Image (cartoon, rainbow, N blue to C red; front, side, top):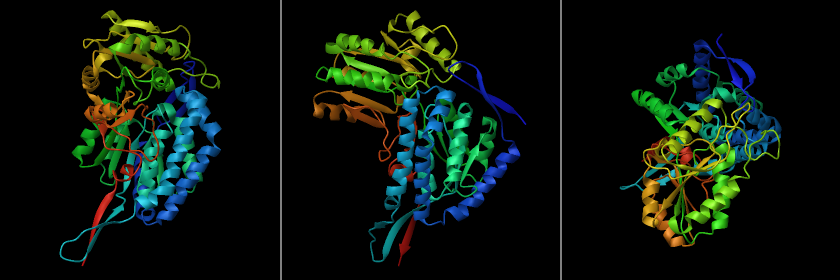
Length: 456
């Protein structure tokens, strides 16, 4: 049986060896999920909700084990992992508590007499392809609404987070999920195309890179399967002269360097009005300098290593390209000596269109500052990106903030706020940042059969 080894991003040492599932094992998992759907979709909604409540409770009960696994596998500091665990648990709680109400039949007006209503139901087994950067939260926002709907789930997690994925699978099993309702797939990417092509699979959700999104969308389209894609982001962070600079800087630093900058909605492009640019730059560098790296298992650590040496190498090459073409490094920017995938908090300015850092997503602890001549120029810079996930606007003028928000080509906007996930709020983007929405009421609609009932 083929095997693979996970790697500790703190040291570069091997963590554990795992066997990949065979094609026959994968086929058996799909068969179980297909068969289980017939029963699970008919289980009372209250019982499906009760399962989600138990899953939430077990996340909290096993928080220590989960946080340690995440820290060891992808380098997230345990204090940040604990926050992610609570967020994941709150998503399961939200759909357990609010989901049944959100799934109530919708009555429609009918001309000529009679009644009509829309009933929201399941469609069958759904495949989720999950990333390593938020290995618990990403799973929760996919799994919770689909299990509540009555869909069954096949979950292919990132190989680098295999231990975490096995704990999640154990939580679902111990919470009472019947066989086939949640299938954890430890498989090679080569088996995904066959799964998507199989008529028993009814949809696929991917959170990952642009490149992976294109591949999955093409495969899903070829077989007329619904897909939801949450891809990259290069979110603008617009700062106008009347913003509260102190509070804005605090959010800028925490939003950019938390999770070592490895978040799709991290504010990667800080677009600052010329009138406050120099002051903002000084404040950002001062605050970013306090985000030193350390062991993610140490509760005092604010920033652990990046998740892999390969990811750090890519980031370092993007920074080097910018510097070689004239960008200025105000902080960091050098790969440190020693083991592991550590990279320092880095601040760049003077990035221009001919540099990779202008058009590519910087998936690591690098903040890029742009000087905007006016509000109009800030909006232009913000929209000059193929990505369209989130954005943030900071100003003391609420009317101006709302007007700017309407003009931004993104799926989410924070007004004097970062984009922070909550179970009740829809999450997703436009352009190259993906297709569809997760969380909230909209998260229940993506893989649902909205069935019309016409009653004479």
